[in-house]
Length: 431
Image (tube, rainbow, N blue to C red; front, side):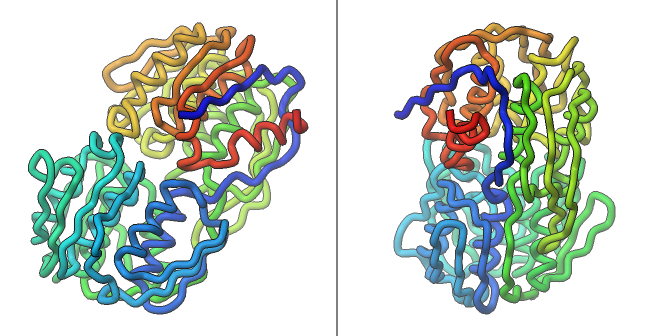
């Protein structure tokens, strides 16, 4: 277990950085390259632990993958090139790897077993395994297939019209991937629009994807053709520095080449509504994904209400938004965020408990939290609870807290942002 220390940034954050590649897109680039025909190259790959778990699993499925830093080459052999694994597929801490791989394995005519770490063992998989069983896949595991370890025996599957109870890109993606190798048409209807990286990237790989409002569908029997993929900077990683620059006095930073996919850019909307001085420059489309440079400086902020359809567009950013809210005048209410309870930790409880240690006025609710600002924070010893986003949110809080912050279990941050503390040092001028 490693420990990190963060001190108050008395001279502000200045300069520009390139945040790591988007985690969601990095996962999909490897997976889709593995089931595509031909050689796929990926630039800007996030070499964090979660995405490396995806590479490891597909290597065990017989796919040749070379990875050197941010460059990955995948020798795709198509759907039928996947082989029955001799070993258990260990997804580590990665929910995306688990759920999307279930969709791919559900149609393959062999047996495989998926296992993950203690956190993955607690995360709900029934939301994916139940519709995949309905399509005809044989899946079993703990809690009647609701939790890992999971055993999958794929085979002949048929398309379904699935009404999802949650707006989840992982659920939607798993079902669409199974649908591509199933008889007939498969559709997924969501209560609100979740991230659409799968739809965009499948289209780039030559798949016909149809959307009608909140329903997306694919026809079975389609193949993927290898592509060259450039991964934009991850807006979920950028969010930590956007918040830091908004609340640390005397700050002005630029984040280069960040993905601003409208299904993911809720953090920008929240910052703007709270009064942050943020601007978007150099907008362009790369590989079907919109990217831009984001410029932000220290701002006077006000509390707001965050809920409804905005939540799926910023669910991963809520821990750091809670830190932001401690420095806004008035009350910030976060609601409709029950999904936070089934992330790497129960993020409602962990955010509230750790921010209270710093003196924040914050209370948990059934579906979110209420934060009263503006509050001067005092450094303390906090924990990531093994959750990368909690660890980074505490790192941002440490930049404004009086004293020296100690973050226990800081190794979790490497899941999505291995260079997080180096980038803090860089923006502090190397101090």
